[in-house]
Length: 604
Image 1 (cartoon, rainbow, N blue to C red):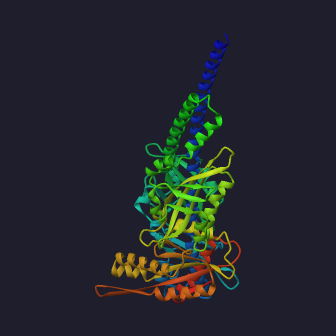
Image 2 (image 1 turned 135 degrees about the vertical axis):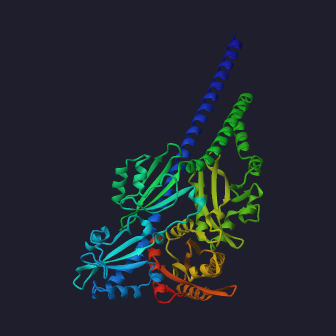
Image 3 (image 1 turned 30 degrees about the vertical axis):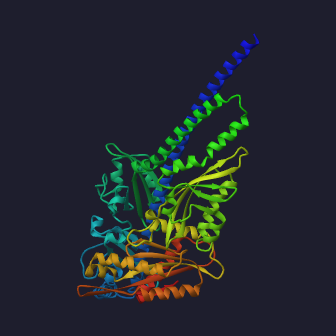
């Protein structure tokens, strides 16, 4: 009887164990599915944040560009305030003093209080820009019925008693406010526009569903996640507004509208939902693989547990830990990976690479000591050293995963690495080992033509450095370098020589910079060089040397063209300052150089 009772108890326990295992299996699968959904949502929100930041950055660029043109108009208005606004001689004086080549204005026009221009019968008094500027404000409007005919900027003309005597307006080609590179590959992913306060397109890329002349009218034909009046109300109150555009026969899109400060313009960025989903799908595949592996492992553990249920539980836990930390398991996985895979032993402080991909990121050792690594890079790249320490802090904080982007100087060039890590815990709850991957993303961060960092990556890098003050006896220096006579070089020798000149300029700049300095191409022939922790006397010597070396002469088939580089420099010693503030200060220095003597430099 006792034997029968014991047999029944064992069968009952076995059934309970199997049922518990099935419930645990289902719960694990459910948890991983929830994790997958959360991961997809997080990646989608991250992409939304990137689109918003891009749009607001474009708004700031528009602000800087228009501010420069308004400064020219206000300077001209101050020079003619004592002249007759009805005289054709005053109009001719403007033409002689402010040429199209220097100001980029197609022409400037004086309008008196009655809205009449010297020597012209046409009445401009009903124009919106005339009314706005006569009320004491800067104005921007289209030249004619559309912006294809140009953009009108206007400012009031004050007399000595600060009374408005008329307005001065300047007509620009709308392309002068261009803020994006019309690259076919990027146009498939992200579309950008500049709108006036009524939603008319000032600048746009040629994309589907925006064939009209007004963005709000185009959006009125679509299904939106927010009501169109709500969107208009928010942006007119100075708020950046993200929303979704639902498609009928095509993919849905995400759009962000950002207002430009101080002027009634808006920048817009749209991106297809499929682009966001495509990036999220990469992570989803990993989650599916991880789910299958975990389910398989749970089934294996359950079978092993049933087979060895009479064995000591501590032995089974030790066996599980050995299986989880088995180096050969990691090596088998790493061999099929396109990224560099590594493990880090907390006790020995050694990194062991599990495949030969470490050579692709500029390393030449299969095993590295963390203390020695930090010592070697601390002087060359303090920020990279701090980033690696932040990753190691996840061990003390017992964080499960970490993702970090760092830059290191390796084999004569700056490399940008994306690091993902996962911590493995022992029975006591402490981290015993870290497993991770390193991916070289240098090509996606740098301009292929010149090798300089691209605008978004450069801005992010400089903003990161600006979070800390420079070292004692040193400054941070923000330099804008703009090529002189570059258009003439392109026109006379061809664009191939222009590309060659851009490459030469960046090479000369890099030869005169250090590993911790940042060289960034903002677009076209404009570059930013950020000197980190540099003594002022050393900075002046380097800039002087750069100014001398950057006078370059090119010759082809009897044609000779010489280019130079004008440089405006802003300094920061202590206290927080932003990229945009430094850009604005350095841009004023650049303007002063362009106005007085090109090919030189000026420190603000």
